[in-house]
Image (cartoon, rainbow, N blue to C red):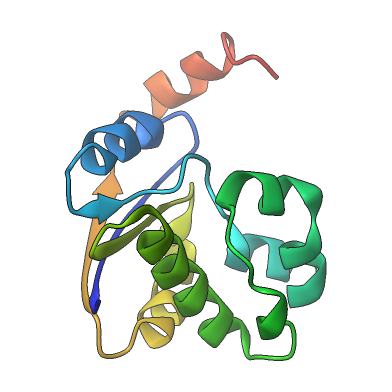
Length: 136
């Protein structure tokens, strides 16, 4: 497995819709929720903190405890490939808002992969207006 499809864009721009459409493809393994791995690292969380969180373990259903000491790039690559293998699909996928801010790091993590990045661009006024109806 050496292919990946990634989705990024501003929150409330339609990334969830695109994740569902792309994830409905029979070959692409899109996790049910965003991982936001590099965004969490930027807030000071460690790899072990992120991977040992209950929310992560319940939603991704893959054992990655052997990766706690690895580099963030290796962990990101392994998580995506293990999740894809777990659900029996040959192409790894991931969607997180603002993935584009970590584009270089993601590409480094997926070195050797045929990687496709889908960037969602929505009118900023519509994005702001959609926050009015957000459930948070």
